[in-house]
Picture 1 (cartoon, one colour):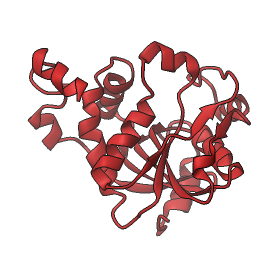
Picture 2 (picture 1 turned 90 degrees about the horizontal axis):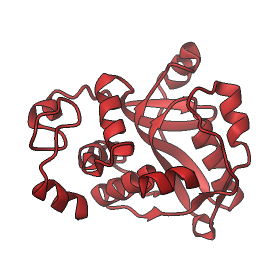
Picture 3 (picture 1 turned 180 degrees about the horizontal axis):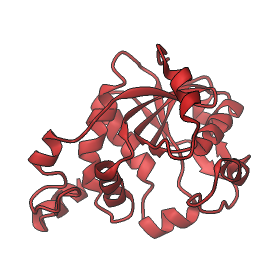
Picture 4 (picture 1 turned 90 degrees about the vertical axis):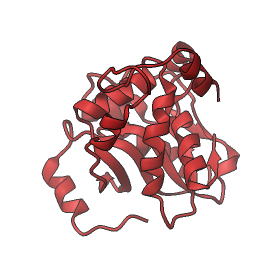
Length: 218
C-alpha cells in the first residue's frame, strides 16, 4: 500500500513515543494498555479495545489528524480480534464533507477496511451525510444529538444485511446512534458497534456500569 511505501522511503516516528522507525514501535506495541470491553450507547451494544487515554489519543490523532494512516495497521488487528465468531458486514461512520476534503480520506472507513481485511469479513461503504453538521468537539450530549439528528443516509447496499458499525473512538455515541438510525431506515439490521477507544468523560458512568455488567455482545 501507499502508506507502507511512504514509511519505507521516509521512516516515520512512533505515534506514541516518537522513536524513529515504525508507526508504533515494538516497545509501545508490547506495553500498550489494551483493555477490551463491552459497552453501550443508548440501546446500541458495542465493543471497545481500550480507554481514550494518553496513548490511544496519540494514536488516533496521528491516524486522523496527521495523516499517519499506517497507525491503522496497529489498531485494526486488535479490533478484528473482538469480532471472532461474528460474520456481519462492517459499515463505517462517515466523515463530514469538510473533514473528507481536509484529510483526503475517511478515517473510519479506512480503519473499517483494515479491520475487515484482518477479520476476513466484508465492508460496505454505505453511509453519507445528507446535510452539513457542526464540529462535535466541545458539544455536550444533547447538543451532539441535535447536531446529528437526521443528518445521515445509507445506500441500498445495507438492505437485508446484518451490520456492525465501525468508528475509531466513541464518546457520547451520538454519531453511532445516528448511523444506526440511517442503516435501519435503509432496511439494514444493526447488531452492534466496534470502536478502538472509548471515552467516559461525557456519559453517565453508573448507567454504563449497569448496562455492561454480565452483558454479551450480539
